[in-house]
Length: 358
Ligand code: NAI
Ligand code: MG
Image 1 (tube, rainbow, N blue to C red):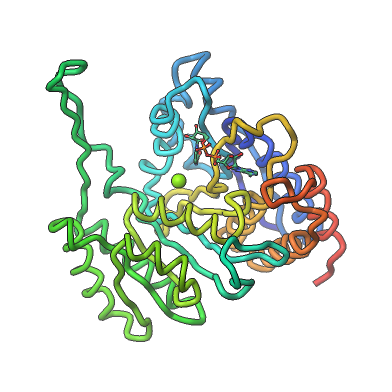
Image 2: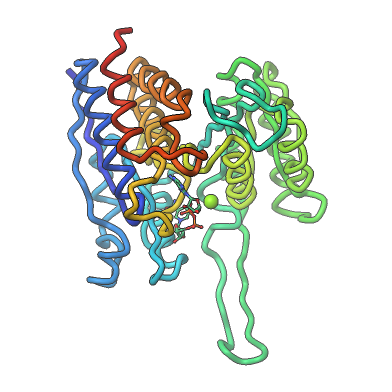
């Protein structure tokens, strides 16, 4: 019997509510399948800790996480703490040292969920967005001078390295190859950005030579928003820089029905450090404490984590349970236009997990 050590970091706001729901579902799956157990340790890292101690997590926080097989993360962000402090103090403070350089965001229209796009149904939108997660526009290079003076200046420097681009391209081509359509779209902005984005394009072409079985094309990021909206079926796997993919994946989540159903994995493909799985949404203070957060994104996240840990059968069982539940409009939370509560959806997914025997 395998035991996986999971670090659970619920964080702030609805992060706490959805991670709790996710852990209940994971426990039900472990009980059902019986071939693995989860040893879960919870960390109280987040904005409350920041207000109490001045730090979102301990100095050696990222190192403490190295001992785990995976990290199950909620969301971070509070109304009374600046967002750049919470993001850099916790989420990026984990992703960067653990070198989780590939952010993987599957998006598709789940059964029972309506896309805001007219005439686009289940099967018409089935994408995986691969986001470069270690450099680019979020490399953390820059500064501010002459604060408060009329000549105040701020720089925010994008960093594109050959090593960084090549590893994300290879990863994206591998993902494309693993999917039935073997189709990759490389997003760029190499008409306006003449250096980093041109290097990005050149390396895409070089790496493509090693993947003759993958069909690939190139899109400028602005035109990409149009293609995603008007021709969703023409896309399959997508690779883009840190900033571009951040924006495109929120668009993708909205086109697939709600940000409340969208999962992601921050992957270190080398396996030298644990990967981190989280819903893509934030802490949603507008609905915190109301019991109506959609836990589906977190359940899908849990399925990605199980797959990554080496439990593909359990991951698939969970995905089928999720699809059964989303197919029933009575189990939709308000973000999907329904009246169900977090607990109702969680209970239904657990029942579906327990009821199935395949
Ligand atoms: P958000 O994702 O928290 O919320 C955007 C909107 O979507 C809100 O109306 C919210 O109620 C709704 N929503 C989000 N998740 C939902 C769910 N599971 N069920 C139902 N409705 C849901 O983004 P926002 O409002 O821009 O940011 C709030 C805080 O979260 C900020 O502090 C921000 O920095 C942080 N944030 C953290 C992220 C992370 O930890 N990875 C990602 C995005 C934002
Ligand atoms: Mg985002």
